[in-house]
Amino acid sequence: MKKWFPKILFLTGSFCLLVSCNDLQQKQQPAGEDPAVNISENIPEEASEKELETSPEEIRGQLSKKKGDSTIAKFYEIRSYAPVWTSPKKRSAFLGELQKADSEGLSIKDYYHEELRHLLENAAELGQEEAAQLDIQLTGAFLSYAHDLYYGKLDPKKLYKNWGVSRKNKDLPAILQQGLENDNIAEALEDLKPSHQIYRDLKVSLQEYAELRESESSFDKIREGELIKPGEKDPRLSAIANRLTQLGHLSEEFTDSIYSTKLQEAVRSYQKEKGLQMDGLIGNSTIAELNMTVGERYKQILANLERWRWYPRDLGEHYILINIPQFKLSVVKEGDTVRTHNVIAGTRARQTPIFSDTIRYVVINPTWTIPPTIKVQDIIPKVSRDPSYLTNKNMKVYSKDGTLLDPEKIDWSSPQARSYTIIQRAGPTNPLGQVKIIYPNQYLIYLHDTPAQNLFSQNQRAESSGCVRVENAVDLSGYVLRDQEEWNEEKIRETIASGKTIQVKINQPIQVHHFYWTAWRAGGKTIFTEDVYRLDKEIYTRLSAD
Image (cartoon, rainbow, N blue to C red; front, side):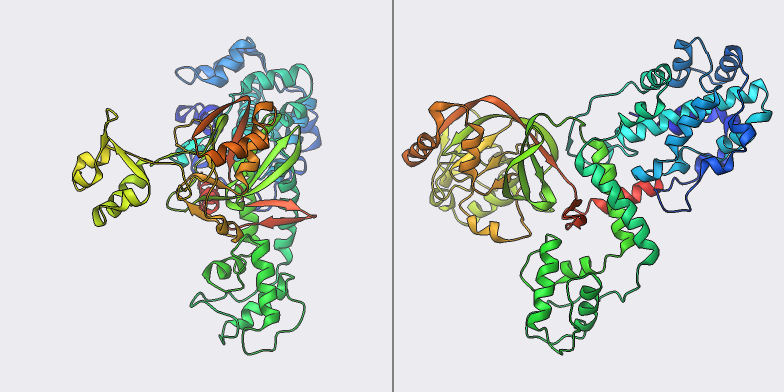
C-alpha cells in the first residue's frame, strides 16, 4: 500500500496549491531528531474554537482541480463531499492524537507540515475556499498517520527480497468514517496500533532513551583491533574498563595493566546481556557493542518499533514465535509462554527469512533433500574433490525422473549435475537429526534436530544455512503431537530407535512466526541484542530519508 501523505494528501504534484512544492522535498525525520512540535501552543484559542464554514461544493471544487481519481476524493464522494473537520471538537480530538506521533516512534512533522499549521493557526479568519483546503488537508493527515500506524512508514517487501509476512489490509477511509460517526477519533487510531506487549514496552523504552540522550556522558570510542585474551596486555583495556563501568557491569576501579579476572567477569556479563558469544574474549563484535551510544540505541528502538508495525496484529491463540537474533523459540498459548527452546539460525550470508506459515506434519528419522544453494555451493565442490564423499555421507543421487545414479559416473563439472537431486538418508550423520517439523513454504525452511548439540552452548548461534535447528527438538515434536494419543513420547522414541522414516500429520495446525527484533524489555530495563543481519541501521536510515 502506498503512503497517503504526499500522494493522497496532495493528490500528486498538480495539487500544489495545498502545500508548496519545496515542502514535498523536505526529508521526513523520525521521532526525536528535532525539537518536538506542540500543536496546541501554536493555535490561537479563537482559531481552535472556531466552527469552520465551508460546503460540499467547495470541497468538490478543490478536489476537481486534480485530474483522475484518488482515494481521498472517493472518501469525500461517498460522503457526498460533506466536510469532515468543521467542528472544533473533532479537530481538537485528532490533533491531540497527532501530538502523540513521536511517542509511537513516528514524527509529527510528517503529518503536521507548514501549510497545515498555517491554516490551523488562521482558522478563525478562513473563507470557505481555504476552509475546504484545511478540511482536505486534515483528512489527508489522518489517513497518512493511520497508514503509518498500521502498515509502518516503510514497505518491507521493497526492502527485502525474502519477506513472507502477510498482513490484512485495512480500509483506512472507513476507519476515519467510523471514528467520526462514533465521535471517537482516538479509539479509531488506537485500534490501528500494534497490540503486542513488546511494542508497548518499546514505547516505554523510547521515552526512557529520549531522556537519557539528554544526559549521556561522553566516552572515548574504543579502537577495533586484535582479539584480547585473558592475561594479555593491551592499551585499549583502560577504555574498555571505563565503558563497562559506565554501563554498570564493572563496579571496581580498574588498575591492572593486563586483562584481569575481574575485568573478564564484567566482559562476560556484558556479552551475556547483549547476546554475544559469552567467552570473555574481547573481539570486534564486543567492541562494536561497547561503542554504541544512547543515541544509537534510541535509533535501534525506533527501528524495532517500525518493524513491529509490519507484523500481523493477530499472531493466533496458539503459535510458535522465533526471534532470529535472540536465537530463541517460544511456544505461546492464549497469551502465555508455555515452553522455550534455544535455536540456531542462518548465517548472515544465508539468512533465515522473516515469514509466517503453519505446521502441517512431523517427520521422524528424516532424510535430507539437499537444498539447491547448498548443493551447488557446498556439496558439488566436495564431490568434485572426493568422489567417495556422497557414499561416505550416506547420500544418494537421483535424476529428474527419479532414476538412482552412480555418483562416480557423473561429470560433476557439467551444468547437468546441478539438476540432480541429492538425498541423505536418515542416520547419525544426517544434519537434520532425529526429527523435523514441516510447514511447507517457498523458502524450504523448517525446524529440525541436529547432531551438533554442542553449538547450543554458544550465545551467538548464526550457524545454519537458513533452517532453524532446535535444542531438544524431539521434545518439541512431542508437544506438537501432544493431542494425538497414538504418538505419545514412548511411541516417538520407539520410532526413532527403529530408524524408519515416518511422516505424521498433525491434527491441530500451529502457526510459526520467524520474526526479527533486537530490543525488548525485561526486568524493568531495555535489553539489546546483536543485530546479526545488520537490519536495524538500514531501517533507521531509510526512515530518516523517506
